[in-house]
Image (cartoon, rainbow, N blue to C red; front, side, top):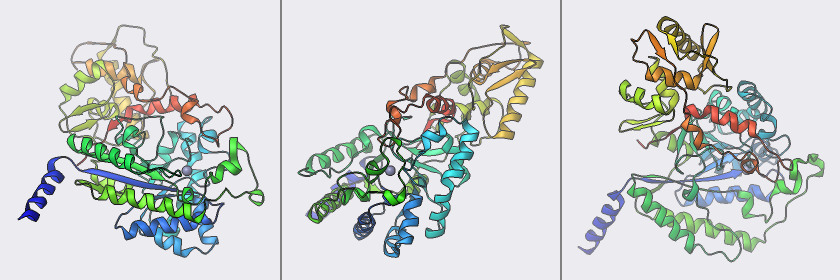
Length: 461
Ligand SMILES: [Zn+2]
């Protein structure tokens, strides 16, 4: 009887709230220190023994190094987990933000694919699967990666950073499911000597309870296999401040003692066991999250409601049926079928000076905008009315307020509210010990804001 009551209590606690998913990911990147191979093997095996699948984001040069060292044992152990991607060589200059900064959206996407595509091909060859996700090395982020990653069939962006974020939970951006900028829902077991897990476990319980109470969500936790065997980062030793060092001159990072490594493995195992035993909590890989969250296409929402929203503010809309990005809503207003598109590639100023546009000319502009989006799968930077143009933002506001009948369509000005979800700190957000001293990339944050048309919260199915 007592067991039954306990079981019942457990079941009530488990189903009292929404599901809480823990995404546990390992940036598997150190191709300098061979002991990091053993660490990846050990972690993959420990987790398999616990019945937990993690996401190993692997660097291209790392997988080629594992092959060259004959570490089929490591590859086999990793293959039981979800395979993600973590750039082709991670820290050898130029790193992604450095080479993307001077490139526009389309040129940058092509260059990202040229430089980073090799590692994706290698992972596919070795594991027989397309990586489920990508995450940038360090803070070396750039929005041009979205288009390239989608072309390569990678649908999830899993990492940490401050360039863009939405309520510390998963969101859709650039046509990718983003688990990024998770704020307090990012929790890492402490590996430093003398650290106790108790505080982290308490924090975990509190976060899980909070998320369950608000319908469920994600707790993100990550580490690097190399951290379990070294006490300094492999790339800081070789590529600090954008330095190039030939492979023949690579230096190995300082090692932890075997006893200290064991202590670290124990902490991770204890953390995973604790999380696994919290009612309502489940582990999920990047690939799982793509199934657990609703897809990128928007729900059907009444056009009148969309028009009212977009007239005053261009940002995502939350409805009972799901979320719509500003781009989703613009396409509804244009009468287009829902599809994944990119934002505009440039910011241009409106040149229309008149307070209104004659109906026939406005209708021509609308048709041209829809044609552009259909042809290029992205929003135009501006919409033409004869020789004059409206910026895409002014056009969206004007279109939303239009009743579709008046002989003159009154011009309205944009209020791009979604831009508030992006960092305005071009130096701090790209701060990384591997970037050149003082590196700053306002150009990438500007491109990021332009892509904010595609931003919206993700919703659990
Ligand atoms: Zn990394």
